[in-house]
Image 1 (cartoon, rainbow, N blue to C red):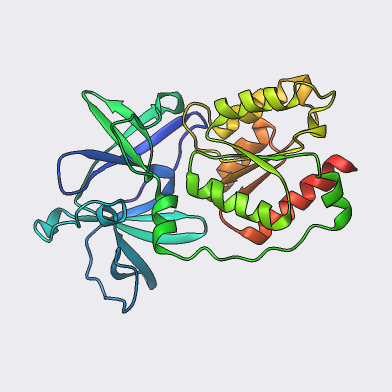
Image 2 (cartoon, rainbow, N blue to C red):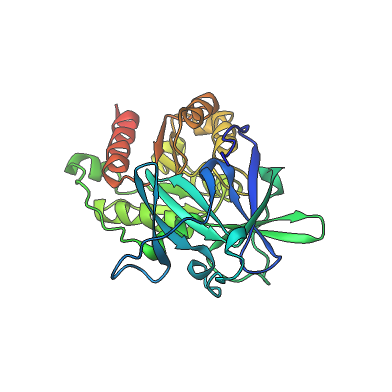
Length: 300
C-alpha cells in the first residue's frame, strides 16, 4: 500500500490504525512512505526493547518498532499476525518501521480541527486529538517515539563573539507542538549561548510575539528569529508565517520553518507563506548554520 503524500497546506491527512484493541490512533500521511504486511524480522542484539527487529525492504534494512510498547502500552500481541501491518515512515532524514495491530483508513481534517490532548489523555507521546464520530482519535508524536529509542547526540559550531554580543538582550522564539523537538532545538541554542523562549503552536506564538515586542520600536530588537514547526494544532507554521508577514510591526523578523517532513512541496508552501528558509529536522549543524544566516540577515 503506497501512501498518498499530496495534501494542502491547511489540510491534514491521517492514517487511522489500531494497537491491540479497537481504539484508533492517527499518524500524518505525509510522514508515511508505505504500509506493508508484517514481514519476517531479524533480531538485533543489545537494541532498544522497543525495536523488535529489522526488516529487509528492497535492499534497505529498516528497524521496526513496536509502536504500542514505544508509547507505554502492552506489546502488540502475536495473535492475528495476518492483520498486523508495518507503517514505513520517513522523517528527519531517516526511515523507520512501526508495527501496529491493523490499519483502518485515511481521513482528512483541517488543522484547526486538531485539539490539544484533553486531561483524560495522558502521556507525552500524544501530540493532539481529533473527533471522529463518537471517538477521540489520538495523534501519535513519532518524534517523541524516536527520541525514546535512539541517541540524539550532536555537536554544533559556535557563533562568533560579535554576533553573540548582538544577541545579548534578544531571544529566539522556538515554536513546536512536540516537546522533544522543542528541547532538541533549545539544546542547540543553549550550546551556542543564545537566549530563547518557546511556544507550543502558532496561536500561542503570536500572543507571545505581541507581548514580548509590545514596548519595542522594532520587533527584531527583541525577537529577531523565529524557528517554527510546520505541523501544529490550533495554528500551523504556514499560517503563523502569513500572520507575521501581514503585520507591519513585525517587519524584518527572520522565519525558519523547521519540519520533520522532507520534500519540495513543503519548501514551496513555506516560501509562498513568506518564510525565509525551510529546514528538515533534525540536522544540528544545518540548523546552526541557518541561525547564523538569520543573524547576519537582520544585522546587515
